Image (cartoon, rainbow, N blue to C red; front, side):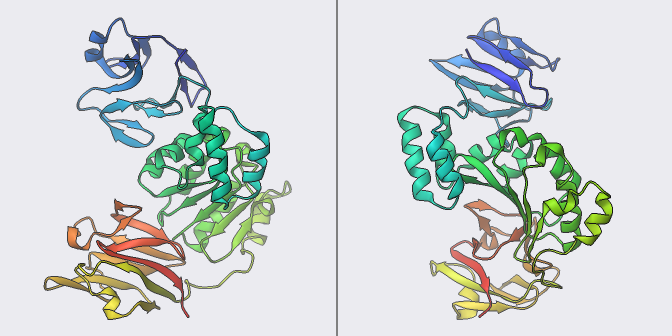
Length: 372
């Protein structure tokens, strides 16, 4: 029997066809008398032609796995947020049947994609929903099902969940202006869906904010399985150093420096061309296969093209050096200069890690490497 599980309270609401939903004038869930009742629902889960679907009334914002949706098909594990707290839709066990031996192997070898795909074949043969978590790369919708309290950030590409087998083992945050307390609270709320989580990695966050984040991550009882906070490519904090019973604040000050720290802002990097279609509006890195970046640079329009220049605060696209590198994109950037990340247009600020590939402008794919 299908059910909706309130992910904040743990309350379960079971239902049958035609469905269950939240009325326009009430946040409580109630069963549908018929599909005609959908017109009075803010959102509802309903049966149609043997499948379960999500209805959303026009003009209302409801998120499905972190993305604003107008409705559509549902699969088990989907997270629906209609404004009164997220609920998980289940019409089968989620994440489903598991293989203890393959679980242990994939947890021990998180970077072995071939092993993960062997496990996925096993899950697909049995119709287990965890097969989605074993795809490589893992779809953002599946990441959001696990990190449900951070689902909007996952959908926006600001937060990534990295999987070992079918379990999240590392969370990567790319927000240079991360609201630390809110992030930790959201991660703690998602903890029961991520029992294998061991590492949080930040990109673009300052050293001082990294110390504060390590202190905050060490406190929640639901995050005691966390082992490390990685500060970009500048080092890492062992969170057990912040979990001493006798004076956490004093211990945090003594253990504030990461293992093997590099003082000051990030060292120079190479902006390297990965591929170029020859039709972009910018000559690839001034005609060279790579460009050493030792300071902030901007991408500014020049005639019908563009050029990389020393930093200009008014430029639409910039790579700025803080403790880590940050890609900044103006809200007014033109389509000809629109960077993208994993195929999604990028606006705002995004922390950039070494060896990560992004599209600097359409048709020009680059990555940051240590300067030679």
